[in-house]
Structures are given as structure tokens and as C-alpha cells.
Image (cartoon, rainbow, N blue to C red; front, side):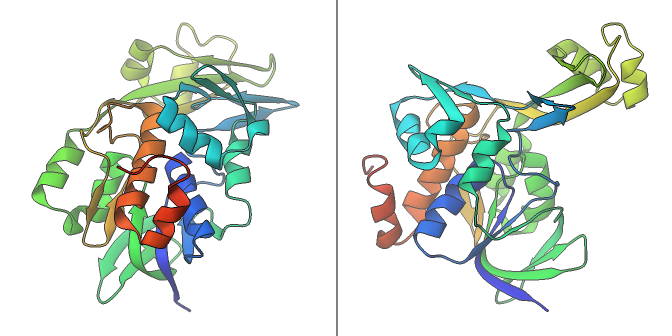
Length: 277
């Protein structure tokens, strides 16, 4: 049976959470698709025994505008704030879970193809097909291009192809209950090696499992706030039109997409967050 939604949000990271928060408040039917088993995207945690480790983004800075948006959405029990510095409490994924509580979400729902007739047809790896009027993509640039290339302009495709990321390798030990984030050089040189090859290298002694982030941090982004073309809307931390980076860029990209793209009724929900542009 095919399902139809006003919006499908691809990715349950912070950008997807911000969009879902306001769509939910406005009563707009939407579904979040997340290819992994958990929520949070690069806000990620891992449990080893009785200990939790944040191995994604957990600490970041926010300017006054970003802070106003963030505080509107996230529960204060999930983070500490000192000046403009925010740190999620461990496990950081609890923050996203709380924002998305009660939302319609499909986990382990990898999108393999998007086509369009009157509506978008979104085919999942499971074979299920979902229909939507609009698609919001929060994935890294290479994955976005794989899904939406045929719907985007040449300029948007060119911009997405120019986005660059750092890679990151993180090591875990189930015996000593510890985590180690490897530096940029180690991560870049060894990223394509197997886990066993990585664990045999100097500096990896005493660790027994590996996590890899292929798109850990944007180092060369797009100087605008979002892309919105033909019903495809691309948001996330790769958009740095406000000179923001990281979580702040992701939050602002989502908020500015909502403000510029939606009805006056939804804009009224956003107005208490930031001043109108």
C-alpha cells in the first residue's frame, strides 16, 4: 500500500529535527526517513557496557540568532550552556529523541530512488514506495546528488559537488571502556582500510572496534542558506550563507528554509524565534 505525505524528510539529524518540530506545530503531515537504526545523524552516541560515549557532534558554539532557535526546540535538561558554548549531556542522542518524540519516523529506511509524476515517488531499499508533494533532504552533498541530481539546476549541482568534508576514525575499547578520536591525518590516510587493518596500526593498541564518519565536518560549504527547486529542498550544515558552521549552520539552514518557503501561518510560529528578515 502506498502512503502519501505533504513532506518527506530524509535524515533524522538536527536539520531534520528542526523542520519536523515546526511542521508538527503547524499540523503539516510529514514523515521522517532515517537509514540507520538510531536518530541524531552526526549527533551520535554509543553504549559500551554501562558507559555512553558521544562520538559525533556534542559541543558547539551558537550566536544569538542560533541560540534563540536552538532554545525554542531543544529541552534544557539535555544540554548545558555557558556563554555561547553549548554541550549536549551524554548520551547526546537523547536530545534528538526528545525533539522527535511522537513523530512519524521510519528507521532503517534507506532511500534508493526518487522519481516524480504528479507527486514524488520515494522508493526504499525495502521495496516500499512513499508519495509526497515535497522532499526535504538533509544528507551530505554526495548522497544528496545521488538522490536528487535530476531535479536540480546545473548551478546547484555544481555547488553541491564543491562541498568538502573531513573524515574521522573513532576507536572504542569494550575492555577498558574508552574512546579515542583519531586526528585528521590518521583518519584521512587510513579511512579506506578495513577495521582490522586500522586496529593493527600504531596508536590503535588496546582498542577493539571502529567507527568511521566519511562526512564528519564541512570544510568547504555553500555560501547560501538552502536549495529549493522543483519540490526538492536541501538543507543542512553544508549551507553557510550566514558564515555559520557546524550545528549552527544546520539549525539556521533549516529555520531559513522554513521562513522563506512556507505559509504565513507557519511564519507566525517562527516569529517568536528570530526577527523577520
